[in-house]
Amino acid sequence: MDRFFTTAEKNALTSLSEGGRRPETLWQRIGAKSGSYDVVSFGDDALSLRIVPGIGGRVLVLRPAGAGNLFRTGAPDEPGYPAVGGYAESWQGGLHGPGWSDPFKVGPVEETDDCKAVEMTYDLREGLALTRTVMLPKGKGYFEILSTIRNSGAEAQPGDLRASFGLDLGDTDQVTAILPAMGRKGVMSLSLSADEAKRQLSFNAAQIAGGLMLANHAAGLGIEIIPTAADIERVWLRVDARSNAITFELKTKATVEPGESTSLRQWVRPLRNVAALPKAEHTGAQSHRSLNVIAQDDEIPLGNYGTWGWIEEAEGASDGFAIRFNNNHIEWCCQWPYVPAELEPNTKYDVFARIKIAKKGNGGSAFWAGIYDTVSRADLGTIQPAMTAIPDSEWHVYKLGTITPARGHWVWMGPQNNPDNQDGLWLDYFELRAVK
Ligand SMILES: [Ca+2]
Image 1: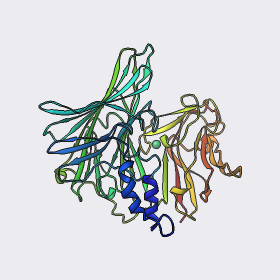
Image 2: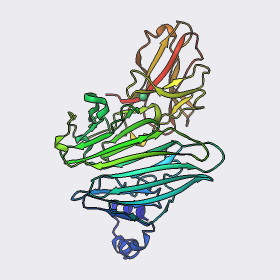
Image 3: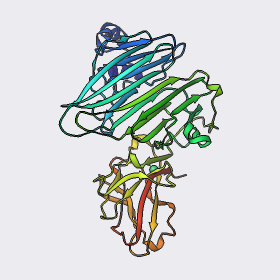
Image 4: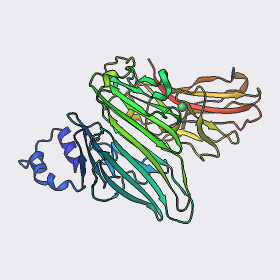
């Protein structure tokens, strides 16, 4: 229903039928009945929280006293709405997996002398429960999310979680990210160039060990998040400069034995005095267009994961990670179906791949890669360089072809079953760059 009214508003719809009721009038009449999700609210002098157990136990509002919501709530016309934004997590590490939008059972808000807390539970499968406790120590200015997977079954179960914070800190071009564990290198701008609309950065467990601070110095807004878990596999910061959305995401790795549990604990604190924090140099771009689009390793679907290839940390990769091909096949195991709607209209793009080969010999082919049109079943460009054409064991950017964006195009890559001449073959990312 939200989607209907948003569309009506966007299209300046004035009446629902000739001479009929105006959308606002209808909204006033039935809007009050549409909020079918219960909301749990609590807070103290420093901050207030609103949680929606029915939509993945989502924490949708984090409001420091005297400021706006630091969590992004999304718009009704976004895919997946209302399971968009705020804090949520899903089981098994996949995007929007079990728990992401499912209804959690919720207990009453418990209050002691020094803390308020609420506990929510969702049964992932028989004998496996995800419990999320949101705790607000009184007067401390932070809150805590404790997510626990408990196995009461007879078999070991995966305990991986993928946790996601959708954040709204105002203009992303003004935001500095600070990862204290990385020292001076850990102070970075989230501002993009005028050629870019989206970007993602990745970090490993050691780099996030001291948590993350995000600060918009111009708006005086900031947030600190400190995650702890037995094994954090990877962390992402995603920036969408056109919707001013920042997503902080992390993936844990765990196996839960029968009778055992595994936990992810996160401290979240709105930052008051951001002027005291380091500020990175921003690009100063006034607007953003999708002229330069990168699909990182984890955004590229990979066939037969673990057998044909997998993602691993790779030295010199732009974000520290790359797809490692297993040199035991020649399948097009990486296939990225880019989304034309995310690109600029009537624009030609050159297609590139950033690849590294650990050279052992000069025989045979190095890899093959290209662009395939699945609609007209046409090859839009393929390269298959010989090992003799690979100069060294460093990263190089290879041009695969030039395309005009359309539905059904895949950018692909595969190895050449050539372990005799290669000690390793990696893909860092695919890139589309508008032809100037
Ligand atoms: Ca990469």
